[in-house]
Image 1 (cartoon, rainbow, N blue to C red):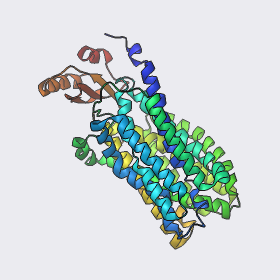
Image 2 (image 1 turned 135 degrees about the horizontal axis):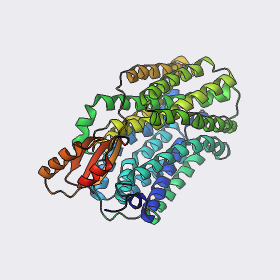
Image 3 (image 1 turned 180 degrees about the vertical axis):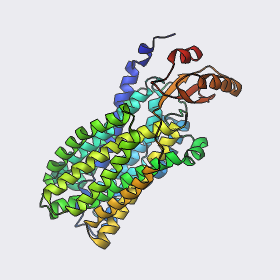
Image 4 (image 1 turned 90 degrees about the vertical axis):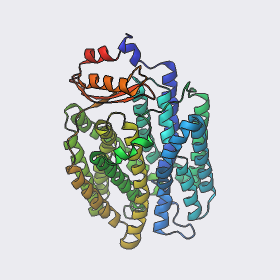
Length: 458
């Protein structure tokens, strides 16, 4: 049997894949996020501009992303990962150019929709799975996840600074350049996979979609990420305008608010993540964060005319937001049945992007009908509804996903090995795929009898 420590050490190829794919993901998301804090400030004078069209321009990428990310992932199984990712990045570049050249709000909406149509998230995750062993797959997924969070923080600072020098069109052209660099990274740094396989832990499987959609616990989390990104997007339809108008902060200085608020909020959330994971208080921390987020949104409404009131509310908002962004994927991983994580994450991601789309529309509609600050009040209401839903969720078992290669040729063999694995202490759920000769296990690491497990699957 190979030494487990050597198996878990990433190879040179895996490290290149991790760095390269995280770079592609972060560059693409950086371009999308940079628009959030500046769009409403630099489109006021466009022809035919209305609050609803502004909200649509901010969020329409979410609709095309939600509709196309799973099809793109499935096409990558058939036509090749790099080919489909390249096509997606080219669509993203095309959308950035269209938006960058536009002089009307309609042109920006079309460009943003094209940006979202380059929905390569599922294909990138599938390529990551192709290029890593079962033992190291979680590491590369975590690296990609961290890169997205870092991109958001950088975008909140870089967006206002860049827009002050080059305007909104400058950000779109910069975004096109970033995606072009992403294509270069894809073909020059990311290794070519030796084989393309379907990975149940990393990509959606159509045959499992029905089972995922019928799972009430997973649906609660899908509703949660929908609400979270609805509120985030709706908030950024009006927040920059309030900061510039009621609070008197010049557009080019908005980064001075975002930088300390985001930085301190990330530090402040860390103890709660530790309590949730290490102390096994996941539901308590999760539900509490949803409630705090609702109160923070209410604070943004009540203190909209106070600089320090708004800054304090924003700090609490982003602390809870970042905490939920970190814990929601962890909950999906814990709750999803063995072999269903990839499909569960696909549905979850689609709900996230559809929430962003709805957030822009709702933000524009509420602003147009009831005023800027009313958007925060509606967001607080949406989050309170989520809080009530979250209260009904079951406390998740603290399970980890584990993948093992198995040598099987028939479903009868798979059934026999499944029965043996379920008898091992600490093994809570098992799914064996004959197609890719992989055993997908859900285990409690504190209880797991590793010796008994290795005796069945080396």
